[in-house]
Image 1 (tube, helix red, strand yellow):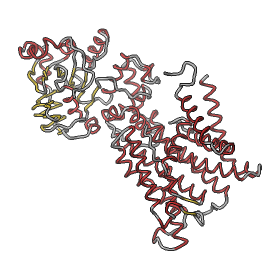
Image 2 (cartoon, each protein chain N blue to C red):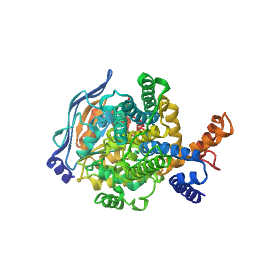
Image 3 (cartoon, rainbow over the protein chains, first blue to last red):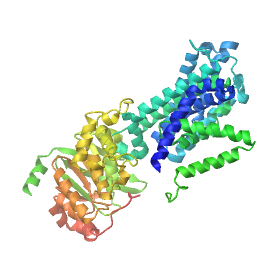
Image 4 (cartoon, each protein chain N blue to C red):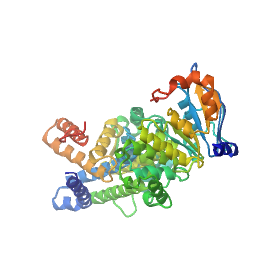
Length: 320
Length: 268
């Protein structure tokens, strides 16, 4: 029973990756540009979820503030573009996409370093609450930035400029997002199999024992927290260019919850899990919202069902 | 017997506890504790529940920082050093309640123990399970402990006896200078307990050990020195026969202490 299921999941995951790669061609062939839009969003969310998968799946850190990094990456793109068009901002004013990326990663990493250092003084539910509180602080901070649209957010009037790429072309933007996702997945794979990854798994299992074995638990967890934040900040950079719109709502804790769902849906700690999780999330959302305005209800019920199934409650002779 | 005495005199002190004090509120859990563990010897720490044995161990391994006094490992002051830094200086411990890395394989548990003494955690590339010489060392340790065929199993799948065995392998993996054993016999059957005593006998002479144990047979079989801790104070210390004969010790502990249950959590 287990093996065929695993095989099916593997086929599904690789199939999804192939479909993502081919999405621009498929969309053109089917004359359905809308689905390319969905596919790009999926790739971006999956990348953010890969970062969270490193924290939750490998390091056991349930961060409820991961959407903050999407917002940080997005604003790190939108603010320089705003100033490059409308003046001011000093050194920040640039339309260079690589600088946007650099700024996104640096800002995301710094935010993770500071908030992580504080949040990691706690464990479990306190850690969850602190990460959530920090992301809400960012949410209110962004709301207060009147220059950048306050709580309405702001539109990007041009996209990031990249050498050799035109992000106004939906297909090119999509492939960039997929390339970033694949790079993120490969980074995850590499880290998970490495010594750092094993130490991280040990920290998840039992920190007291890891101390006693000579491992500096908190710095290791903090490093994972920073890497996970940086990955999501890259997703934020892509997201700003995809939606050409940023708003404080990106940092809201409900979005962090969605990212957690994606990771758990795909199987925390599994390499390609975030891809399946993000796909299930985005596609269900699209499908159910086309059926009913009240799509959150069946969506919630489905999520509960999946969570119960994963916990073994719905299987015959399920775990107590 | 006489060989044991020789070792006691020959060995250099590995661990020195000098005048260590600790209070939780008004409760003195350690009062001017002096204690020494010499190279190649076993020093047993006994005492009734709530005497402060676990708190003293916690201070030696760094989970609790003493209010006063000094702790030296191979002459180096480690009184305020972090737990993992002490481990890297050669201080290893086994836990009272089995504390393996659940969800990881037996091999991964041992590999982390082997790496923990010297390897940097920051290597984020390469397959850690194939990296030599660590992987071979981990395999050899499992072979030696008779757990090789369990290498790929989750530690949760091991029997209680095997888990206690692995617990010891983890503590020994980094060839520590000092081994802190927190009730290694806890929860073992009589036969398993005898086996564990046997195993510790073999290790004696290779590692200095500080043993906290309720099983008096094991204590008197293994220890070169016995210290008795009562109400946060060492009331007697010396060779097992002398301590056993000490009237104060008998009154305070041994008389009623033999049958008592192993403590399941540290004193408040």
